[in-house]
Image (cartoon, rainbow, N blue to C red):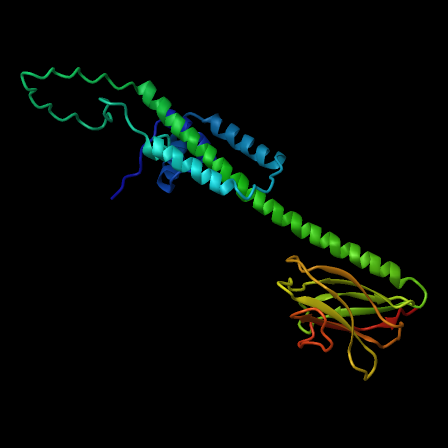
Length: 291
């Protein structure tokens, strides 16, 4: 059964950077909290470090790490392990033993061999400095991991915002076309509502599409736009690909703007389809704007 460590104020100060970043083992985190709950020292350094960490996260804009960063970090860590620089591989100087381990009895030296000099006493200041050095290494590693994680989150958020902006710009462009005389407007949607968007056909036959919720295309896949007049056969009017954000702003062309024309989208395995591959991804009927 493991006992929770009892920490001194000096040890709390040593552990403060890792405590505020959550990098300690759970039992040590609990030991720090237990000490703080009953200690007469307010340990203002913890509050200062916490405020500094918050300020850094709020002011530093993370960037996407280079592709080769992971391999370089791993290579550096392996080199540190090989040379004993990693905290887990710290080697005590020859003749210096851990203070908690009793020195074994030295066997009687042979007459023809000189007696080794007594081991120098362990310096508590040196031991504390070594521990701080190890803690600094771990804190630096934790900071790198945190920046990379926050950078990935920030990049994902920026991509979502970029996709939303692209869709809004596409809708704005389509609405401007819808305001032209003779234009028709169609609200395109999937049966389950997962895909939606706007299609506008201008008087000269130009079709403006702004869609969201689409599945990203891969390989040779393309989305094909179709125009269906009345009971006529579907006519392909344009093709486009879609990224992982699911947003598409595309244009196509029909022979003329005919009210009642159905605009539809399908996902085709290759370009050049002459008949739609079911199911229909989204569809809507083009009509003149009322009023």
